[in-house]
Image 1 (tube, one colour):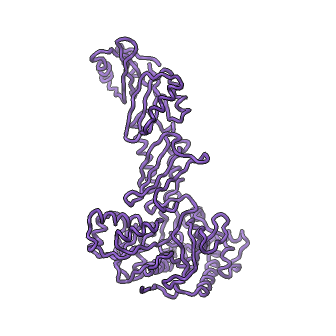
Image 2 (cartoon, rainbow over the protein chains, first blue to last red):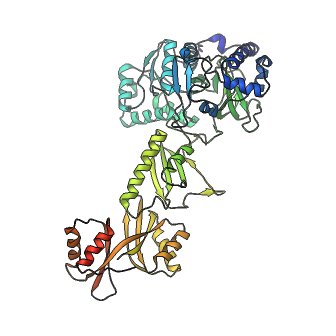
Length: 438
Length: 137
């Protein structure tokens, strides 16, 4: 098998050299955040930690963790290490009201991000000859522009289709000869299903590769996508706080996702104790973004559960690999690529009833698309003897939840005490999607 | 001028009506009349019983969502056109009916109509003025 690299030096660097590079970059970064980000200076001062205490990557564990709440508490720009005049791009997490996290990039940051995505594309087997069909959403979400700029960096031809209108997506694939598809794995499944239904002649489709991410998926889904679209399907991982897609991706051997560790130093820790875990053990993934200028996060807790390995891959890359995330340390759900917290549903229900009624979020995958049903136990305050009033309530609830979560939901009213409770507390979520990380 | 109707929220699930009937039977509550409004997802059971407060408490204790609703109940003659007379009275004053149901009263030759209207007092006064006897709860 022919193996290509976008940046061979960085991707195949011997361990010793990588550690030296990481150490240099870490030292430089810590000096920068200590001087420029009051939030980090305060945290480090509290711990009695000086930038000079950080000599190499073995000192990484001395540093404080950063949590999503730190970004929320300093909303929108409080964690930026540079004035806004230096920031050339803003993105925000796909989370919603009250949960949004804002991230910024300088031109240098955008360049590094694009390079990371380009490395992922090449690692998966793409070249500048490819026609890259981007069906991620373009906008505040990092998916669309992230893949776009990475493919541009590579020099491939980009079709910035964005989301929606599956019939048109397929038409564009046929007309423009798309060879690489980038979207969420559930949308890839949906496209495959639609092609089958419409009896599309697969000889008219030139796709050969796919990079899918922004939501958890399984090897079973990979298999289905590969068979349905006649492609090789790859998992691309990222989160906006770190940069967006491109933090890691699997190569042609599909044996773990290569992390771009010269830019994002990974650690796997015990989520309870915060202690580092050895290779092979599942724990919370933590990133330190050593090269980022606008938003250089120190030991950022992703809440994704993974294990990593430092073994050299058959593809020749020496970079550390992570397996597909197997779950989360919090209750966040990813539904159609959108981050959803059960507490958001609760906050909406509180507007309808003094005491939040018991509820249950049921997530399922029907015809390869995520569907979300919210079952709400009827409270005396919400009840009426009139069908009209209850139906109006059902509709109001649905609209309020949809505008908060940014996904469409079905609301079903239930009798009190019909939702199963464990230890006095309701179980909030049933995720019926296979391997959705729950 | 009005009586209490016991309104109960019922999910469209097998056996729920029997569950409610059992609660009432166990508490020695007699059902005088009932009607069900149903939609695809749920229903509202409306009951006239001999002791609405007791029925409410018993159903609540069994985790049902219950409310007591004031409704008008009137006697109408149990003959052809009996209902029409009452409806024409309400119609003449533009009083619209949200829902209604009827049952045969034990009083011989009489039927009873239970109805929910927006302005209960105006409707009751009007019916009273036209000689309809309201049933008190």
